[in-house]
Length: 260
Length: 308
Image (cartoon, rainbow over all chains, first blue to last red; front, side):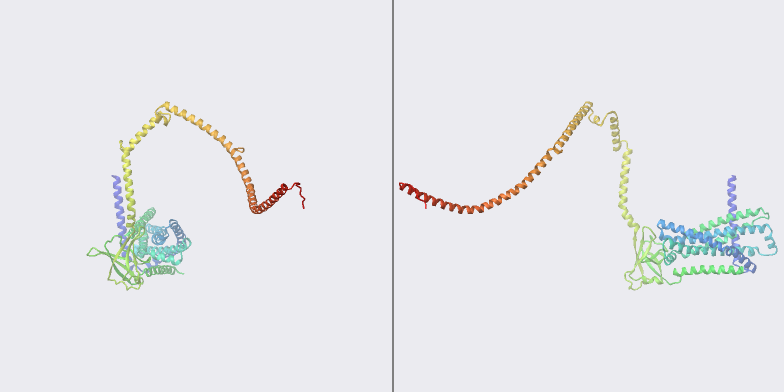
């Protein structure tokens, strides 16, 4: 009986949480398309957010991309050669590594670095009463705090994921030359034949959706913190678990979209 | 460098790279080129899918854009060919739906005469089908029949084996009887003859045969020594034969000499005839002289002659 009650409570809470999140997302999207949202204060916050999330980490991100991407490409190409699947290396490079692994790696990188920071920042602001103070001074919290962070998430994810893809393609060029002895012309032809425009568009949309949710969910969980300091870790851990769940759901949905 | 500048530079440069890559891809994929649509027909839509590549000489020149079913139940295949590849599609081009055993199906375009007029867009061409899968099935079918036959035989054998009155069980029963009998007998021979005395007699006979064979063996050894030993008969015969051969060689020389002598003799015989005739003449003369002398002697009182 208790077990059934617990399961029921869990189901109701999860559904309510999902519905609340989508309701909140709808409100945020609506604000994003209003010109009045983009005032000078918001723009300043947006620039700072993009700077902290993308520009500041760019050198580290590029180094990690080059190292990880080269290793990944090298291993995959070597494996394809051993299995005699050399003909499929273009499909593997474009269909799997560029359009799937690249957004996934980028979203993990940004989530671990920025989403956790946003979640904690929001929870601390709530506990310190900063949110209440802003509201007292009639500052629109959604416009001032939320929209810049969410737009930053979208922009950063799309741009960094694309950069990661470009690094992978350059690594692929190098490794295809070393492993398969392939010239640049042949490599670019194979890539062009394997590249599917719709897959790339889906991949970019997926990055935008990733960026939207990996900032929206931590903000929501941060704002749900109470006025006690002990609620901060609870809000952060809950937010991060939800972010990773959202990442998996979006990844699965994108794969399903590709299938059809 | 201000923070705003860095952010602006990052966004602009990355966006330019991404847009450049997308535009390049779109251009290469033919998004900005004019596309021609041709209609093909097929009795069946089996193996046809939207997005299927259209290939000319191994190169992708277009793809299947849409599949429709007309009022007569014929499948209409709309293919899109970009402007730069439309030159390969001629009025006498044939379109072959190729379904390989491994890999994706495709429509192969075969144009034998590139000087033929272009294919009008409103003309409907029938698609031929080459099906590796069906061909493979046709080839495999006899094999499958044989396998089915083998399986049936196996089933027959297994059912026979399962049947207590089946042939195999009878054979096994008999084999069991034989082994049981064999276990009580001392040998297979005893089991075959079923008489212990006879078996003993055979054993004794075999022993005797063995002794005889041993003796024959010894005799053969001795004979071998006598015949082929150092002092054996054959070496002596060989020596004699060699001696005879030497002597015969010498005899050949003697015979040659005799031949020479007989030749010489034959030639000498001619002289002999003449000599003989001379001797005969001399003897006759002497005879005449003797007759005359005798006549003289008999006619004279004093038979004394004064020789000249």
